[in-house]
Image 1 (cartoon, rainbow, N blue to C red):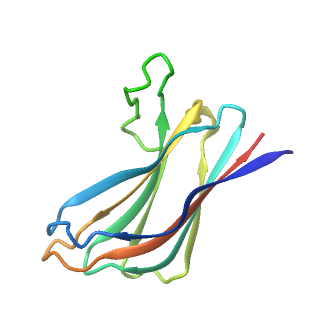
Image 2: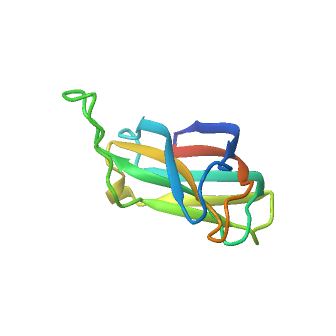
Length: 138
């Protein structure tokens, strides 16, 4: 069985200090990852350290991506994530989680998003150091 490892996100510090209390922000950190030649995919998520106040959460999700060369400026993201992992204040670091992606729902491309929901009581310092790999196998 052959495969490929794609470094989706190198070790990066994400800072959400500017997010208002109770507000959620999500950013696509990798788009249009071609997985068409593979039957199995696993997202490997590492949280090296974090500062998550109160009931705040950090999430990493992978979504089906239906982008096409016929309309390269349009983004066709499925609103239903294939998989999502939430990191909360009680989780210990280093934190490692793998997410198996269902072969029937992967499609030809996927995109990865990272985001956070700020603590509901007040806006505070919130950050996480994260790296993500996509392991592909045929």
